[in-house]
Length: 296
Image (tube, rainbow, N blue to C red; front, side, top):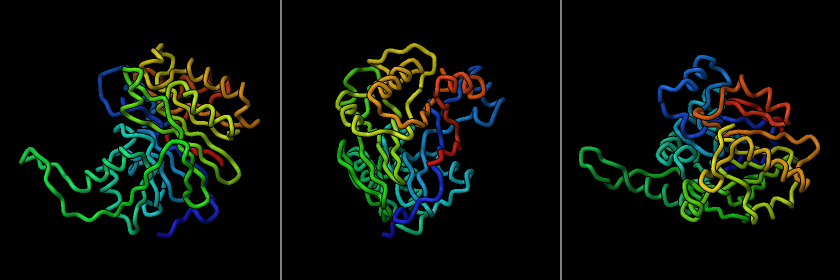
């Protein structure tokens, strides 16, 4: 398989989506009604990042529409990196259907759960009339490469190091049941930390991060100004985010002109972009929005 990342990257990174799972819900709440009325940067798809020229982090039912809206040729995509198995980041049927229309094989990188899910979807499809799964005879256009925390791998010239995220949901040790990964990306002489769906950084993960100085850090900020229990959220609010940023600063993990970006926003708890981006910017935090270009 030809890997187009072997050539020099000439296009900047682009955030394809910056919303949390509840952007797929439609309750009659003032927050989403306000966001829809404002439009533009206030509307969010599920989180995904395009790394030119041929790689995406996380893939859902929102991703194809984002590629189309931002004029990214779907046939340019050779690789998908998955952070974890929750449906707002990983939808195996969508990936299978996407791969089926490509003119080349698609490589998916993820933990063993991701591999098992794609293997299952490849062999089984739900038959609604029978009320059961049935064996499929379709060929797969996907190869899966299993990744593990602290084991670096390359996609072309991009070095990628998975690290364990602190993604517990409702119970402190959920992390043992559903492994979530953050990623360190090194290319073009710069370093990026992609740290969504994580509460405070795990001690073992921070020990790894201390070996880097980041030009860009994209952090979880799911709950905005809402008070949350850090032992049960699996995410951060703005207060926790500021503590994490301070931890990084104290350890000298940021380059002088580092971009610090808040993403993965809930519509239930985070006000529209237009209302809060300015106040966060005063604290050195860039509020992410769909379609945002990150100069790299």
